[in-house]
Length: 171
Image (cartoon, rainbow, N blue to C red; front, side, top):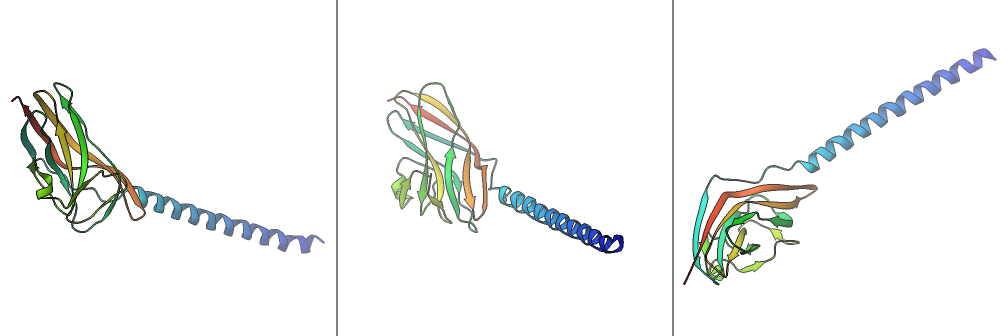
């Protein structure tokens, strides 16, 4: 009986080793896929500074990021950090079908302006920031952060110009 038990024991060991190898390969594949999906290529940035001025109660639109020509991104949201010497209204928008540098008339450059969350950022689109104040102010906009999905990849990354300085002038 001892001779019959020995082959079964070796066979069980081989099965255990096979399952361990298969498990290790599956785990390694899962790690690679997880890393790949969390590390898309960086969005383009520049060291440019945009300058704009507008009278009080008149919004100004500053182009902060132009969509890449080779990618379409599903936007989860856009974050803008603004520093101002008084209370101002700041809103990120998606300029569909166009781009701009600085304007008070975005309809001349954009097919439509929409809230970015849930939209697709396609080639030819851009992210703009609307700035408005009721009193004279100086506003500094930092580089925007875009949360997005690109296929199975997802990230929140800084994008576009380094900053923008907006001066809201008294009347």
